[in-house]
Length: 317
View 1 (cartoon, rainbow, N blue to C red):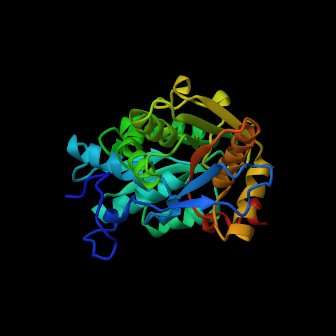
View 2: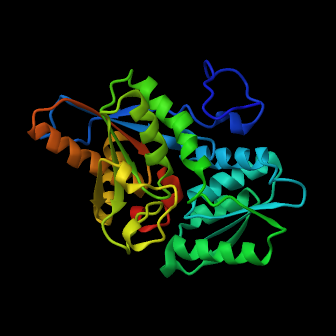
């Protein structure tokens, strides 16, 4: 049986399931787009999560939550998995459900990109579109109401409060980053949606070296255009997110996130979504501060997905 976080040797052997391809994504150094005032003593790397079979970092927690629910006996004949999502977790859950033969239903804001909706439907999952003005909070409330009315039908994975979400990154992403940097990582920067990536990866990295700084990235305002990220202060706070664990939080403007995502495509040939642009902007701000202090650093961030699922959005308009 495949175990999350298990490291296969080599990539040439065949796999028995698409799920065996989740994880072990490449780490790439970012150089060409960096401003000239960043010292050569500062290295910035990005984990390219679009290399996961479902195209995003959410493949990791989706599989982890499925496996946990199966182990607990919740997923069985006649049951349907359901959750609220801003898009990527929905795609990942739909993919895992298709691979395991489990029906999946998802609620998401109606204004998420058309590509995300179509990908989910392609995997055979059912979609409920909720009020875009309510964001993912509206989708969460919709799912809770639906599950309350049909408790015998649904298995609610609840990515915002499910420990299996952050545990996925504790046992895979954090381990991979430590190994790929040879233990040199000094700062970890990640966007906050559910909080799973930054909490799980950060916790694992701090078990290796307590001095590693763990830094979160949020949109600057409640109403923003950075799909996948959550303005925690104005939203339903995810139960798995503990702000006190973080060493720092950067608040990023939507236009800055867009600008850096576009720069990555045009100058580095790295095609990513707006949340990746936000993460890079935070890394650059951090790198400038460290450069001014004359410090050396190895900053690692996560680029959650590719730009192909945002072609019809303002990001590439």
